[in-house]
Image (cartoon, rainbow, N blue to C red; front, side):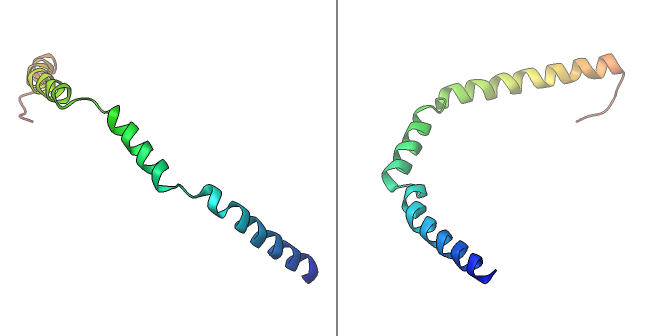
Length: 75
């Protein structure tokens, strides 16, 4: 029984040595991934346009909901 446990531990340590560096993200890979993510982000102007649209539509839609449901609450 202990012999099989020792073999398992040796096998585990060998596998750790083999795969240790293969699973580690290298700095250049990390930089490339972050750069590509940054390239796909929407532009600042696009984000500002969405915010303006939401700020314009929400109060109007909220007033319409209050009328439809007869609510006199301020949110």
